[in-house]
Structure formats: C-alpha cells, structure tokens
Amino acid sequence: MELNGVRVSRETQARLQHFAELFQKWARSINLVAPSTLPDLWQRHIADSAQIFQLRPAPVTWIDLGSGGGFPGVITAIFLAELGSGWVHLVESNRKKAAFLRQALSETGARGSVEAMRIEEAQLQLPACDALSARAVAELDLLLEYSEPWLSAGNNATGYFHKGRDYASEIEKTRGRWDFDLVEHRSVVDADSVVLEIRNLRRGSQS
Image (cartoon, rainbow, N blue to C red; front, side, top):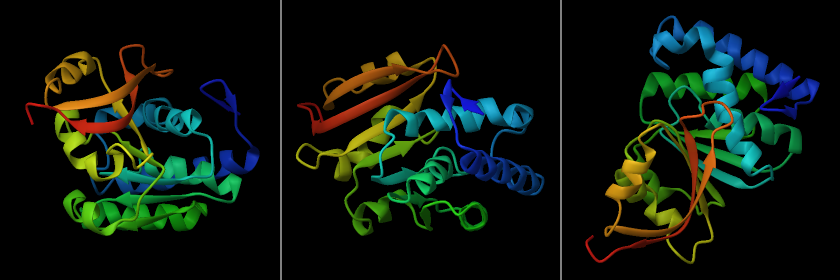
C-alpha cells in the first residue's frame, strides 16, 4: 500500500484500516467530521493527515491541537507505532471526541495519549514538544496565539498546520502581529491547500 506515493508497511496499513473502520462506526453517532466528507475518508482525511508525519518522519514528541476526529494526531501516532518511539499528545476538550480518540489509540496500538482539556489549559500543563500540529482548528492568527508557548524562538519546536485555499490571506492577516520563519509545503492531496511549516515564532510590533 502507498499513501501519497510513500510505501506503507502491512502493519501500519492494518492499523490505519482498523482506525478507519472504528471511525466510521463512531461517526454514525457523533459528529467527528463533516458528514459530506465521510465517503472520501481515506483521501480527504487519512492521506491528508499522513502527509504531516511524512514531512517529519522521525520519532519525536508531538502536540496535536484540537484533535477532533483524530486528524492528524491519531494518524501520526499510528506511524510512530512502527518506529517504536515518539509520542503524540492529543488535545481535545470535547468529551465524546476524547472518548473516541482514547479508544482509537488503544485499539490501534498507536503511540499517543489524550489530553482532555482546552488548548489554553494545555499551554500550562503540557511539556515542551518537538513538533506541533493542527487541522481545521482556527485561522492562522489565533492558531499562532495558541501555539506561542511551544513555537516561540528558542524552543526549537516546529509547527505543521493544514490550511486551505485562503491560506495566503490568513498569512497576510498575521503581518505586524507575528514574525516567524515559514516554509509552504503544497499539499499532495489537494492542489489548493498547503501545510505551513512554522518556526521561531515572535510577537511583532503591532501585537
């Protein structure tokens, strides 16, 4: 099996398949993603999330903000299981979604844990990380506010944020409020989307 042109082991494929089946089961009773996207679960959500790990395929510590239905946090944690090291802290305040995430991690043997708290609480309670991820959580300006404790200059952490076709305007809105090092990775799943890689986050003169 390949995801985004990258070969995936049988063991990881089995874990992803099990997650997909569990996701479909839970999605019948709780709103994990937009219902219209469920028929395209593998491409729209699983492959899209996999590209985050594929940008940083190393056994590092992640924090995934607003994990929701497990994208990209659970997918990253599944890939880490094959490496046998690394960890994902999945931050999700919704109790039903947090319950789903716990079961997904347990049943797939993924390397992660659920932190059932708001992002503002996680800022105070979670340890430093190597990498930070978020998908469909907030506009970039607010996302940087959430991320500052981990991504500020000197912490050596890197943020990987999925953004859709309006990403350029979101970046523009941060000008003056934030300074940061930026690499734009064109999505391998959706030509209109990107993954923004952000380091050395600093408050600007207008913040």
